[in-house]
View 1 (cartoon, helix red, strand yellow):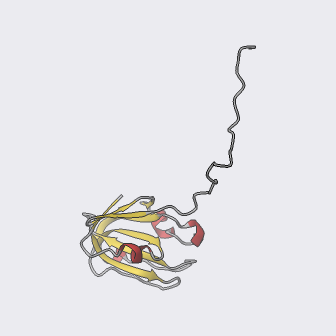
View 2 (cartoon, helix red, strand yellow):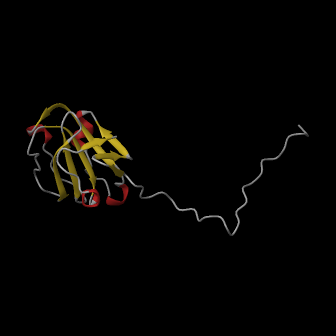
View 3 (tube, helix red, strand yellow):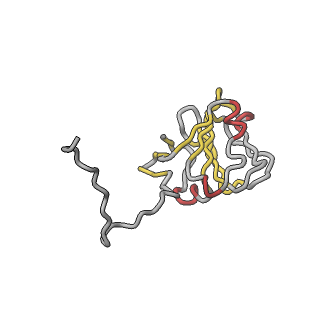
Length: 143
């Protein structure tokens, strides 16, 4: 036991970069006609989809929430904003993950937002995300 080395402590120098907690990461990127979600959470079950972002604080919402619907449809692809604490951006996608509709700045407590066409996926994003990437109908979204 005499030959064991003691673990060395990390030394910080004046030239070391400051430690910054990762509060806001880039969550979306564009390459040509494909939009890639970089930080995602999924809502696959009935209860996950029903809860969605209700009760989530604006500061904690730094990801894309993807709702997976059982079938492509219009009525069940509607969302509500009841009990929401912040506005959000929303994308609706078809079964090929192509954008069929979008809403910028969906407001809290609004009863209904529905897509213009049938959708298989709904993606809820932090406010102003769509303004930054300007997605077009028909563009593909990957994750």
